Image (cartoon, rainbow, N blue to C red):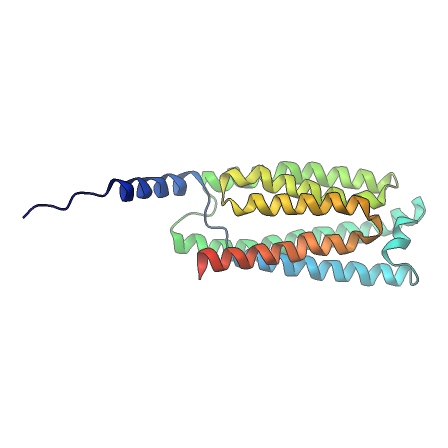
Length: 212
C-alpha cells in the first residue's frame, strides 16, 4: 500500500511553528495582563484619593501647581505607590505566566525569558530615573506622559522576543503618552487608560486568542 505523500505546506507550517517556539517566549498569559491592569487601576484610584486629601479643590491639578517643598513632601508616597504597583503587578503577572509556562512545557527563566526581562528592564529603569528628575525639577505635568512613552518603548523593545500583540500594546501606550502631553491636567486619567485599561484590553484579547 502506497504511503501518503507528505504535504509540503503542512511541513513548512510545522517547521515555522517550531522555529517560533524556539525563538520567542510564548507563555505570556492574558490573565497576567488583566491582573496587572487591575492593580494599576487600584493604584490610580489610591493616588487620586491621596491627592484629593492634600488638595481638596484641585486634586491632581494641585500637585502640578505645588511648590518644590510640597513636591518633596509628597515624593515618598508617590515612590511608594509606584513601587507597590510594580511589585504587586509583577507578582500577579508572574503567577499567571508561570502557570501557563508549565502548561506549555516552557521554563519561565529560560534564555528567552532573561532576554525578554532585560529588554523590558533597560528602558523602564532609564525612564523611571528620568521621571524622578522631571518631578524634582518641577515638570510634574510631564511625568505621566514620560512614564507611558518609556513603557511603550520598553514593550516595543521586548516584542521581538515574544508575541506580536505586545508591539501593538506598546504603540498604543506611546500614543496615549503623546496625547497626554497635550492635556497635562488629565495625567491620572491617562495613567489609568494606559497602564490599567490598556493592560486589561490586551489581556482579554490574548486570553481569548491563545488560552481559551
